[in-house]
Amino acid sequence: MSEESQVLRQRRQKARELRDAGVQLYPNDFSVQDHLADIREHYGEWSEEDLAQEQKILICAGRIMSMRSFGRASFMHIKDATGKLQVYVQRDVIGQDEYRVFKKMDIGDFVGVTGTVFRTHRGELTLQAQEVRLLSKSLRPLPEKWHGLRDVETRYRQRYVDLVVNDSVREVFIKRAKIIQKIQEFLRGHGFIEVETPMMQPIPGGATARPFKTFHNALGIDLYLRIAPELYLKRLLVGGFERVFEINRSFRNEGISFQHNPEFTMLEFYQAYATYEDLMTFTEEMVCWVAQEVNGSPQLSFQGKEIDLSPPWPRYRLSDALVAIGGLEGSEVEDEEKLRTKAETLGITTAGQESGKVLTKLFDILVEPKLEQPTFITHYPIDVSPLSRRNEEDPSLVDRFELFIGGYEIANGFSELNDPIDQRERFLQQVAAREAGDEEAHLMDDDYIRALEYGMPPAAGEGVGIDRLVMLLTDLPSIREVILFPHLRPERS
Image (cartoon, rainbow, N blue to C red; front, side, top):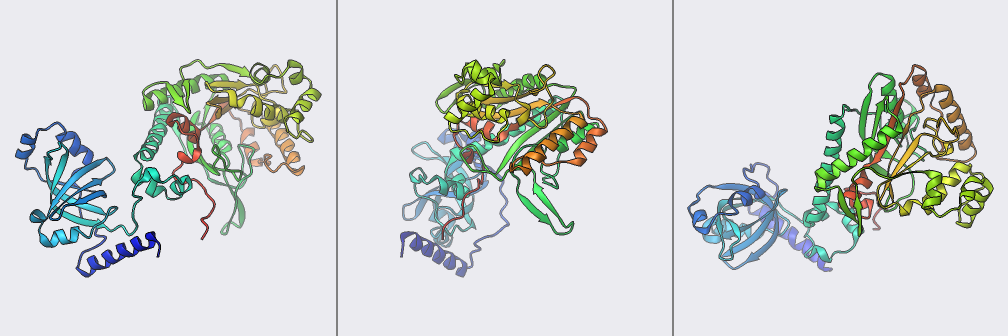
């Protein structure tokens, strides 16, 4: 029998013995009055003498994280959502029968403790237990030394254990919640209202990506998990909402990497009577403010690199960035034949690809990894921007930007295409590309065209990758570290 199996067997035996003795293993009538962090904060500076005079009875609960026994007395540390506290349990105080029950409790069990505070000879604030009650029996042991468990896949798969024993992981997700809260606060402070749009859509739109497909029995139709909420949010602009946002879950049936998860969180917001240039300035202000609120400074360290989020941020046209940062010659960018030749030398397949797609693939390889400081890249080819407004000076380009920080794309925004005739033509081009084998090309959305025909105000919109922004502000290299339950292959039996 393995060591793990033996421990599990011992724990189940203890559980049977407790149940046979009339002890409830999972009661639900214990009311917590005090949180551990509040106890530490209130009594933290009190002297031994002052604590000895304090007779207030405290009632708290938590998970046992450590235990040391000395015959008739034991020390344990319990942990709740706010922190840890030491508890001193004496047989002569809680009673012989109760102490016998206590001795069958294990690390990992949830207990309710009633008692008074004192300070040990070593100066540690401690709760003198007058009663210890089992609230939930743990049948599996926690890792003895979590820092020795280096299997990251186990950490992701058993996130519930990761959160129990690794305080730094808990702090990441507490900070993630604060980041989202501050984004909401910033947008609401600028007149945006938060909305909800369908997660199951008859036509997956708003991005070029492969969707997940399902079937609705009652309606008898195929539905798709959304790849973006964009087209529904712009329908709201048509309906008269001038500033809207949604922090949404989106789904893309694509590869998994340290930057990509099939299910991810994105902020999308749309503003009537604004341009992509307005949104660049707005994004600078928002990201800098959120960093200041969450981290206390617009300066941060990300994977050993110092990054300053203070505005303004540099702005490059895509073609200029390929020359200034990517190292291409101007003639290679301007001459399509030379562009394709260069791409082929870098292993990029160009056959059947529009020149705009070749250009952006070169950018992905030559420029994106070098964009450590916050940088806007603008004027993307129309080939890769089916929903963006054409540039007035060069109709082969669109009024679009992407934001890069730390070598990652963080945001994508553009002046919206609100011409229904132009939009229909773009959709038809996407349909043709799809029929030619491009599974990520956009589908025709006749209802969206109909909405535009009612008139949509000039507007700009943007999507911000929340997961990647959290990675940046928590200095973590993998998206799996900032998603509570990332997708993994099934466990092998």
